Length: 286
Length: 303
Image (cartoon, rainbow over all chains, first blue to last red; front, side, top):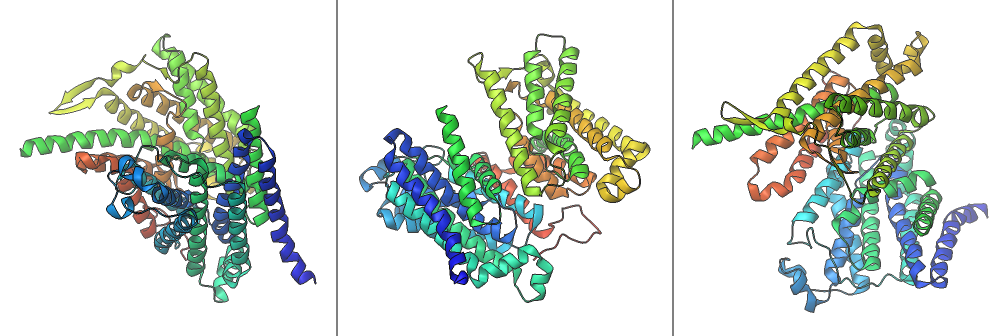
C-alpha cells in the first residue's frame, strides 16, 4: 500500500497547492488575478529548471534561454495573420505567412525549447561544476543577443505584442499540472533514477554502468521542452513580451526560487516558486 | 591604404589592452575572495557601483578627497558584506552562496535606485576626473589618457599584490588558505584574519576599478559595472578560477578579446559581438574545462 501511496502523495500534495492557487485566482479581483497566474507560470518555469538542476546536481544558468525560445516561438506564431505582416515585416516567409491555434502554439513552444536544448546540450553536457554554469550562461547570452538583434525570426529589440492572451486560470493550472506530472514521471523513470544516482556519486554511478553524459542530455532536453512550454504559457499570459523579460533577472529570480524551496525535490521547486511569488506580489502591493 | 589598416589595428589593440587591464583588476578582486572562501562573489560589481556613486556625490570635492572617500566606502562595504553575509554562510553549498550573492547584488542595486529617486533623476554624473578621458596621439594612434593610466595602475597594483603574496607572512597564509584551507588552519593560519584581509584587498581593487571606470563612463546608474562584472566572472572561469594568476589572465583576455573581436567585426555586424564572445567562451570551456591556462593539473572531471 505504502508503495503506491507515497509517490502519489509526492505529486498530489504540490498539485493540490497549485490547484488551490488556480481556484484562488478566480475568486479575487481581476486586478489581483495576474499575480496568481504569474505565480503559476513561475511554478512551471521553476519545475522545468528543477528537472535538470535538481536531478543532475549540475548548475545551469541557461534554462531561461529555452523559456525565451518557447515564448517567442509561441508568440510569433500566434499573432493574427492580418496584423503580422504589418508589425513584423522582416520575418522569414514561413513564419510570416502562417499562424497556429492556442494549443498548437504551446506544443510548438515545447518542441522549440526541447530541440534547442538537445542541440546545445549535446556538447555542453560533458561539462560539470563551474565550467557548466558559465557555459550555460554563455548560451543565455548568445540566445538573448540573437533574439534581440535578428529581426528575421522575431521582433528584435522591440516589443512583441498582439499575442492572444489565452493563458487564463484553467489553462495556467492545467499547464502547470502537466509540467509537474512530466517532471514527476521523469524523475521516477529509470532515466531519472540513473541521473539522480550520478548526482549523488558520479564515479559510483559510472561504475554500475550509468552513461552520465547521455542521462544529463536527456534531462536537459526534457527540461528545455518544459521550459519552452512554460515560456509559451508566459507569452500568452502577458500578451506582449521583450527579450529583456526572459533574460538575467528572470534567471536569477527563478534560481533563487528553486534554491529557497530546495534544489532536489519537486515539492521544493513548487513551494519555492509560490512562496517567492507571493512575497513579490505582496511587496508590490504594499 | 595599408597604413590605415595598420593604424586601425594599433588603435584596436590600444583600446583592447586598456579594457583588458581594467578587467584584469576586477578578476583579481574576484579571484582573491574565491581563493579563500570558494565563493563566486556576484555582488562585486555593486561594490564598484557604490564607489562610483561616492565619486559622483563628492564630485565637487578636491579629487584626492573624492577618491579617498570612494576607497573608504567601498572597503567598508566589502568588509561589512563579509562579516554580515559571507561569514555565516561559510561552508554552505555553492548554490546557496551564489544565490545569496545575487540577492546582495540586487539589494544594493535597489538601494542605489532609492538613493537615485530622491532627486528625481536616474543616475548621477561623476565629472571630477573626466579630463583624464581626453585623447592624446601617440604615433598616429589616439590613446585616451585614462587607457594609459589604467594599464599603469593595473601593472603597479598587480606587482604590489604579487610582492605581498610572495614576500609577506600574510601573503603566505593567503596562498596556503587558497591551496587547502583545512590543512592551513591546522598549521596555524587564522581563518578570519586571512579572509578579512582578502576581502579588504578585494575592496581596495574594487575602489580602484570604480575610479578607472567612472573616468571612462561618467554617467553612474544603479546597474553601473553590472555588465562588466558578469563578463569578468566568465573570463575568470575561462582562465581558471583555481589560481589567482590564471584568473587574472582570464579577466585580461576576455577584455582583450572583446576589444579585438569588436574591431574585427564588420560595422553592421557589431551588434552580434556578445554572441561572438560568448560563443568563443563555450568553445574554450569545451576544450579546456578546468581553465585555459590550467596546465599540468588533472582536468576537472568530464563526463
